[in-house]
Image (cartoon, rainbow, N blue to C red; front, side, top):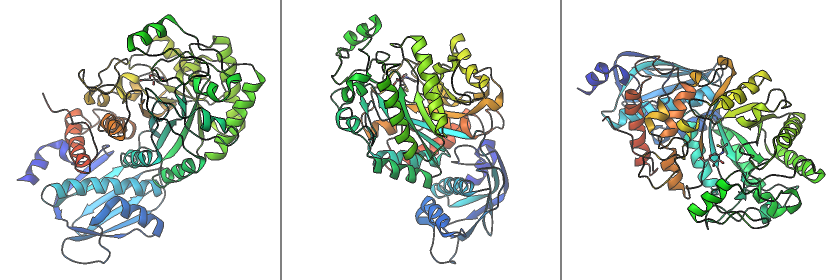
Length: 508
Ligand code: TNX
């Protein structure tokens, strides 16, 4: 019966597989499975793949319903693989180590779906590769701090959805979260606060290095962000000479009184939700020295190619100062052999370093200013990472009556709206100017690991499918009903593992 159901619903060709693979060719029938023996060649590879497959891997060959898995790495398109399930065994042909890793996640998802039903694995050939090179998740560790253990668990799950970048928003008005050897006062004087009366914290350089290496084991590159010149109130707690006095706008005043929050004050930690009031002192020699120290430390600590320098919501910074600062800092990043990333506002800065990548956080229908700013990066030979706020800002509420989350980005944001969009249709830029897609979770209202999990899962799976899979509508499976079924099964498994994933939306 069950087997027939899979055949009759076309989008059940890859039960439980998220993100959807590029092509899925079903075979005739199924194979009974109770265990696997793994022949992965290289031992480091074997350890990594065994870790994904878990307890189903047997140490010795043989026994009924125990299938051999053979993995080979042969070159080809980066991160791509072919996975063949036949009656006599499973073959993985991968282009590279990342491809072998992703193939094994696909296999794990197929196995979980089979074991959750009748133990019959459908025969299938899957051929798969990413649509975009950059597939990311941003985590704000500044508004609330999340320690390495939490970050490792999130990185692991992100990697299982074939995401390959985790962007850490390491500094904001409310706190600084990475020890900088050349500027020790940031850790000692600027890290203890957070939003509300919550505790702060920071990553030591050891924590950070260990996290970078953990991420690399999961084929994830860490992208560190130090947000400048705005979002820098905390810097003034450690180095008062670097900070302009807070620019208190009428809007900030109104919001603060509505929320019953203190306004920012120089030299006192800021625990509110306001944005856009802080600025570094642009043009001061001390600020340039500070930026050089921070970039030296970040460069030394970060093997990945990108340094994110922020550049958003610098509402307290006059435009000429902003332009001069972003021009200068982006140049200092490229001089260190790294690629700068900025939020899209800097796209209108004429002197931005060539090749700077823009991170678009406007809405799915851009304003004229957002569209112009985004095009600016392309004109200077850069590309864009798409983080449309009304679609994949995972800190937006799912529904009006949720306690967690914000609504400013046309929220609430349903799982269906996180899923149903086309990256290529967002901005009027050449297709090859899209580097990738990144979901973002800001943490003003998100205080615990449970909160974080609820907001991230399963919407991150929707973002992952936009980043990895062929465009929406490309096949019957690349559709909301299919995603609901596939990611619904995944959500059940996450929940069974104790992850506080939000329930999948069911059909009306
Ligand atoms: C906008 S997105 C911000 C953040 C907030 C977020 C809350 C962006 C570049 N800036 O400062 O945390 O909204 O959703």
